[in-house]
Image (tube, rainbow over all chains, first blue to last red):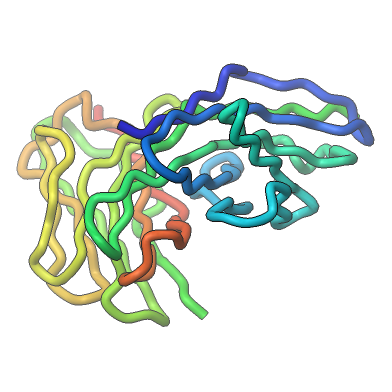
Length: 116
Length: 114
């Protein structure tokens, strides 16, 4: 079965510093990977995805993620953190059920806290 | 553009009462639809998914049921709520016919059982 792991419950970073939120995956076949962000009392918002191609994927709000096949990782990054980036971040991997339909398997989430 | 609506935003219900949460999607046809529950602000548990009208798949046995009476309407129900049904319920959709598109989420319903 497909799975993702987010090894850090919380990441603390100062505003203006680079941030990294870690995700590793375990899949059979090619991985389809996603990052989402959740603000308090809101639904999940899609940030970016990796399907194929360039290992560096750029997404919304200045976020990017680096796909590393040898390390089975898909870490989320941002060069300069903002206080408003403080939120809960989820990594997810596609678990195909049938052609044209996908389920997502989510990690347990990492809380990002950016201090002023 | 596509939008997804969930209501109500918050709900407080007594144990043993019925439940109906509604989710609708606009701007797309024949979407895949999903119900998730999020406990304690963390992990998401997929409860139900649907690939078409009247087609519901359940992921875990539980006190809840789902229905899809119209193409873009997805309803989560219970006949008698339990304390353990408390949580944050999220509806999501994804385009049909493609396995590499992201799911898009509504803003959720926070359900408290007293």
